[in-house]
Length: 286
Length: 286
Image (cartoon, rainbow over all chains, first blue to last red; front, side, top):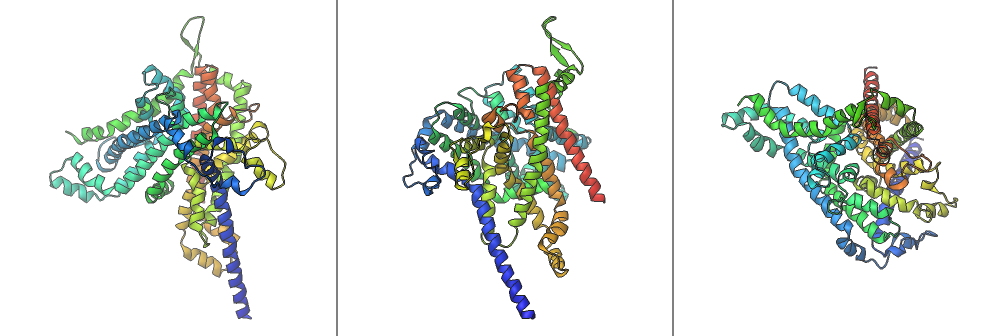
């Protein structure tokens, strides 16, 4: 009796295992589908985008004659220039933003000073105000300051990031204060303690904060739309959406542009996956 | 140099950028929302809360507010429910779980503008969406051009990007649940659903709370898909607040009322954050 019970539970276990695997696979593939379809269409001429859709067939999702023509054409198009702009703006944002945010986080975590509570409140308030919501009044200010259609104007709002400061501060707080004392005894000033002790110990959280800064800038749409739309300063997502609005769209090139704008952040997220997950869980659980 | 001066030297770049680029625009919006262009006297005149009163008497604004609230009431529970179930699914023992899970996470790399462009092709009458419906033997749908389906269509594309991201937080939470608790529940003869409801759910309350707040705020700020796909239509059915602010400021050119609307949006997000934190705190004590 008990043996029969056992085999029936283990049978149910196997069935459950198979069921969950199949369900997980189907849902995963469903999520992949739009991107995969975009990818396949980026490898064939724009005129073929709608050729294999009715009815659905294997050629909808595969092509035997892939070509990189669309990507080559992308290089010389406005969208290509816009993608370079996005790369430039995001890179500068990460470098300067990390310097600014880590310095602020260091002051909040390591230096005991009067008013640190007030400063921390300013940081929290600034990230409770959603940036996109205040983009319109800010764009108005930037017009007065002649920062419209400049790289500076595109980069500036991405530099001070409350979330990145918060993340780095959390990490810096965990560094033992004895190290600060030891550094002081060795004759280091605050800058030395920051440069020689805190930064080298915090590479993982710096990468996490760098990702936050990068994604903020790369994924932004409202701000570059309001502040930089001339041909020279336009960013990738804006150029892509302009393309979509045109009457005569080359879908092949549009899909190739979509893939490039997606693959760049994807490669960075995958490359730094461990740090990405870590920064996600720190912001979520602390 | 005193410690205070050192601390402020470290903080200055971040503080200046947060105050000038986050808090100041909000303050400017608040200030300017109290004024109005006057053609009679030239320049602007102080009108108190009249801009706000006008907005609440304006049919387009009221519609945008209603659409935003309906959208939030549906999209947030939907996304959080789906990400929770997926998090549970992908933390079970099953073949290829990690691979399928990463496919669900993949779309988080897709910038909002790119996803809107890709889905604009999926939603075309001759696009991938209708091919799928045809395969399932379902009638053709009009998606973005139907006032009944447009908002739901936008919710689907947003969930495609969002669900994987929120799932990451919940997976981190579920992995923190000690396995002994499940074993204990199994010994007590609890069913799988029972374990999910009485063990997993209460223990991931913290990450769930974070996801609830962060998801609600980000969904209040949806802009790119509306601007790229529907321009708020058809007949105002997708006119979310962010887009209404944008048209009020740039198409209608009524900057002062747009500023008032910015303030309403910021207050709305702050209220939601405050209320949700309050509710969660009181349920923590219970």
